[in-house]
Amino acid sequence: MIEALDLIVLTPDKKVLQTSAKSMQVLLPDGWWGILPGHSPMISYIDSGIVHYETEKATRYIALYQGTVEVQRRRHEATRVNILTAAAEEGEDLNAVKAALEQRAERLLALAKEANREFNQIRLSLEKSLHEAQITEMGL
Image (cartoon, rainbow, N blue to C red):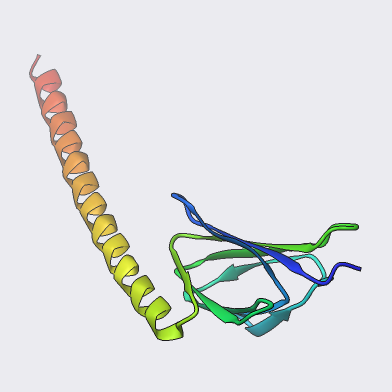
């Protein structure tokens, strides 16, 4: 019997982590869940938060900015846990991991606001052009 989890954490731009873990705990919308080798398959939304996982040597942490967690139980192989998230930071110092994610989240929020502003400018410009085209068409 395989006594490990294959833990994989992916963001849109990189693989943050791929490791073997003895166990993990993750905060889901309905509370803290513990995941051990052989866990039943499941998928759930993850709000921003912390994942605790145990390796042979230490407890480590992953700070997440929203995403999903999927547990896959595979025959004759380790249970796989896939975490897909917008942003993640991993390490052994809980406070450092939280601080790094907060900085990343602030950058993501600033980028999203800028993209929204640019989108609205383009939309308004297009609406103005369409309105002017309608006026010109009516004048013919």
